[in-house]
Image 1 (tube, one colour):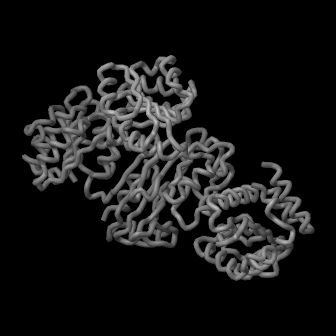
Image 2 (cartoon, chains in turn yellow, orange):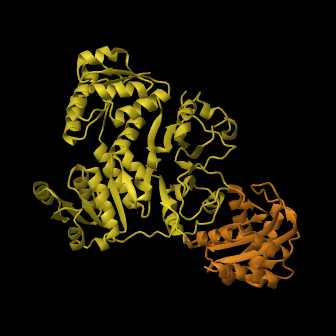
Length: 450
Length: 153
């Protein structure tokens, strides 16, 4: 398929790389001359320098024969224009744009209600709020994603010495949870090596272990990990921007105790007007006295959600040092994200990585329902619809030659959630959860496509 | 949770007579049911069979942990059995099984049975422990070996 991507920042460039790896024909339009040159060297894609939010430039990129148009610049305005041109003028079959401002996405859907193009708005901030909310639902988890209509979660935990899982083999987890798709799907060892495990691999204290967990097994898995659900969570949110404010609102809905700290007095005042019973403090969260006055040591989770990456990192570390049980930080800078395992922040939420995941799952022809990349993008999880004629449905799982590092972890047939074994076949119409190392992900698409 | 607090000596089989999987399940169920009046041996066998049909509890290294839930049971029950000749238990490594822990839990036990299963699984990974079970001459020695392992964690 011919795909045009407007905007070559982290999101656009990462998508160009992934999609060209899957064999698509990619044209990327980037406004900045220096970046455009760098992208030409890095990517297996046709890179054009110019303003992609114009009909002329889109035409030059070949929009008339494109199956998919992506608007991934840093500007909502430009992405909006790309969306309008793609759907109204060029009738591109599928258009996906990134829009941060919710009122824009609303306008966009009104505009396109009666139009044949399929369009999708992806909002990284809303995705970040969703992710933080899922993390808060699973105590102790450093990373969480939901699949199979929320019947299955994939979550990563650091294994404590005292955990009942410590010293067991991966196969024992299957012994404990026979009949449900609760299993170990990936392990990151203390030396940062990722393992897509086989049954004999041992779970060692200090490992970061990713489990697929049937929703019905969640409390049991938490109990074996030594984690407990709190009666009423006490959350401190730093930054009343789009993510922080929306998160506070949703936490009020589940009756959490919320303290929101915002440095800008205007923003703090606005937040106080919107929120019903959260405590809003105007102050600097990297100031120790502010945190101490708000009894940071009693906070169950501190969420640094300002738009300033470095500030979030510092605030998160400070909160942990002053006694917060867990600290999450919003970080969009990939270089910083890679540092994280070592510095003491419990979970990192990258709106841009989340946007990439959302865009990938919306792209048609891939039969993908949900998609998530685990911490540091080393492991990918895909929920796909099995289609007839695909390699995936061509025989018993043990005999279709799935590449190393690929697990078919769960399968939904009708209402039932099944645990696929080597002797089972995937039938067309089944919903399947596939876990793979990022290296093998391109090969997975060969199995899924018809 | 200490396994040695749950296991009674009457529920230890020094050498199984059965050579096949189903016979071993029946033999172990009978012995365990004899120690607990409220436990019906036939019911227990069918629960264990059902669990085995999901996936064998033969974990390799000569070890199996058949288990199941029973309604109206008051407490966790454990039996231990040993087979000198070995039983073909469809274990994951294809090797005969010599050491069996049977775990039966009340239907309503929540996560308790998982903790017990995890504990037994962890014990059996210890080669020295497996050897002491294989070499024990009497039921008492087996119970003592399990007590010693329990004391380590």
